[in-house]
Length: 490
Image (cartoon, rainbow, N blue to C red; front, side, top):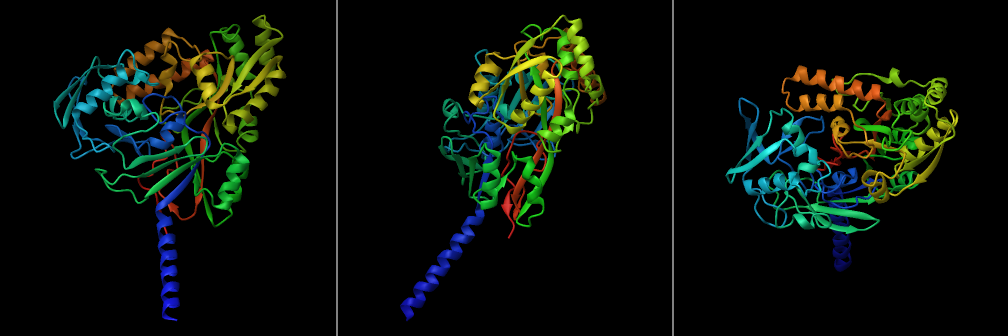
């Protein structure tokens, strides 16, 4: 009898221990699988969604409110002329392979990102850096070729994280950073798992392990949440079922905003899309509210330029490209365009696929036929983003305040404006906040008046989570699933 009682108590204790242990693990759903895990060598948002603030850290970082905060740099000083930033680094920091982090790693990371052979997707962020110098192991000096009040903001991007020369080449498949979580495993097509790094220099996370599961199908995403196979879906891909979670006490629905300007990109290298009248005709043929209602089930904010409506510098320019199919027809006639056939390339996210079907019908109504090609993410990056082999495409640009992409000479939609470039050049060297706002608003107007793309809606952040989970971001000031403050509240 005593043996049976002991066995029963042991089993009960084991069960209780297992139940308790489960509360320091989490499984998150993700729509897209990242093509690699190196944020300094890839443009896909899914990379940062796994590793930003978790595995990798920068000198600065974005907080959940969008503010720029110290990270591996405790503070920084700026010279009077605004061209020299001196960063003071955290003490006792190590990479997850045990090697130390110091000013030499900062120099390596920034020099690597801005080098002639850099493959960094946001190389432009580092274009203003003239030199990076090690002052001592905990101090690094960054000298700019012109004043740049936005440098701490630029260094908060995932593309600006710190890497080590010993491990940088392997970060695509086995990332090694300085963050609170370290890479554990990657089952291609299924999941990536991170585990807490015991040697982390800062406050240890409350989670012991985090698994990111890749579930692209909206129906499967709903089923996985309802079955408890996934604890949270920070970017839930099925807005049509989101309301069901709101009325279920087992879950919480987290509605916020993102930096994701959703656009119908137009490849201006290809005729007749190089004709502003054709681009304007396409913009007027699209009913934004149809997209928000039909593709996003009522979630989303109409936009008329490439800028987030929640930003204080935003200008509402939607009236310049309001829904007016008769004007579209007149513009096409004026441009001498008839029987136009265009290729519409759609990446996997449901917002793109659903919006594409609606836009196809609306363009057909004004005489523009489109052939839809549904692409996997890697194919889209290779053929559209890198190869420029497309006419139209739908994608959300989720990088923070990324209006500067329109000044890039070889960017995938091929837009060029000397006037816009001049405004952005002036912005780069302006530190006065009021003047920066004026320049940002002028840049927005230029893009809207040039019909650089068809601007559709700001992507909402629709999150679904177990009701006991705390600490997930409501808004998305950058592409991230920051787990540093996430815990289970029993």
